[in-house]
Amino acid sequence: MTDYREPGRRFGDDFIFGSATASYQIEGAVSEDGRLPSIWDTFSHAPGRTVGGDTGDVACDSYHRWEADLDLIASYGLDAYRFSIAWPRVIPTGTGGVNQAGLDHYSRFVDGLLERGIKPIVTLYHWDLPQVLEDAGGWPERATAEAFAAYAQVVGEALGDRVDTWTTLNEPWCSAYLGYAVGIHAPGRRDPVAALRAVHHLNLAHGLAVQALRSVVSPEAKVSITHNLPTVRPATDDPADVRAADRARAVASGIFTGPELKGAYPELAIATTATHTDWSFVRDGDLAAIHQPIDVLGLNWYMPGWVRQGPEPDPTAPWVPTVSPGCEDVEDVQQPGDRTGLGWIIDPSGLEELLVDLGREFPGLPIVVTENGCAYDDPVVDGRVHDARRVDYLQRHLTAVHRAVEAGVPVAGYFVWSLMDNFEWAEGYSQRFGVTHVDYETQVRTPKDSARWFSRLARTHEIPAVDAVD
Image 1 (spheres, helix red, strand yellow):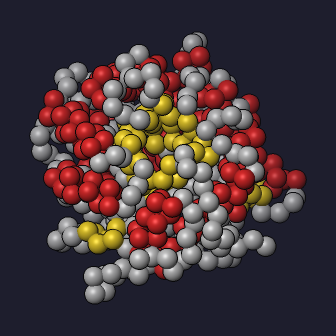
Image 2: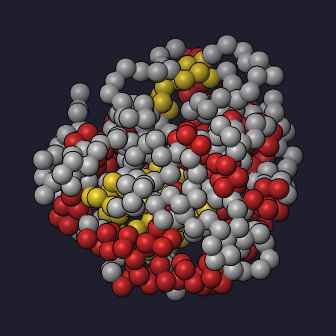
């Protein structure tokens, strides 16, 4: 069995290496310069929603420290930086008046990246929906998709001459299922019908935003979407378990990539969710609007999952955060193996497997691994952070990416999650994914050994040995 520890593999000179963050996770300054609350402000301030009651009120204070953070990225020799724009900082109420101070901040930010020779990769939505829009119904409502397209056009007009790649949505699976079905992410609702309506209107928002962006940004700019598509494996060879895996894939992946990249919802996804909805909220013309050409498919990937056929579900029971919420009779099956600090199993073969599968399903479409990383809490000792487990994780997963490239998959880049430790959503500050350690009391940034290792990779394009950290 391959252990994926294969230093020396070399990526092509045009392969992009970068790091990634999200606005609510790092910016802070939640009530400054005209910004109004997002659903994550509201959610994190509600008792019991996050570990330790943590919020993103200050986070990494990157709104004020952005120039030093860009210097940090440049010091690592990275080609690109993937960051998100806070919708409530640009259009605080979700629709209507534009907050120029917010746009000006991101304009300076993009200019700062370009001055340092770093490609700006913009995500328009990384989960911080303006609370005003949630109060009006949120993603289950068509009006939110229409508002998102208008927001995309505003940002595209302001920054469209300078941004390398535009990503419409980050992980709509999480927005729809964890936010509206399971309730462990903002806005914290537990309504399966609302979740499926949110799926469709997130898809529609993507399509409408692509059209809006194409009308205003540079013709050279790339347009993308990022999904956390799972590697779903049947727990056994039993046909029932194989079918369960097919259904889980349909509701977790195909329900997004089907309409976006093929122009139709998978029949299996429709059938699997039929106990909750007849999908009558899909209107004539919606699928054509959703099915827009994109230049890059973004993939966020952390671990594979195994499923089996479970018992008939209790229709009154709440959904749980399985590989695929919505398949109530499909059960997750835990497998033995090494795990990260967050308890996620480490199996880089799942990344290679999924990349190869995507290459077959969508031939010729460039893929970028827009997030991959692991949580470990390694301390600062004498000014250094020795995070050997993260270095090993990165080496093995980059080997998986390289093996997929060798197999002919057009993988064009890899972004480590994350540039720095930050507010990790419902986990608060209890989990550290960064290649840069952040002391949340002092806001001091300390590069970890993984940052030094990844910097060497970015500069040489060759996967280093695990001890190549200086």
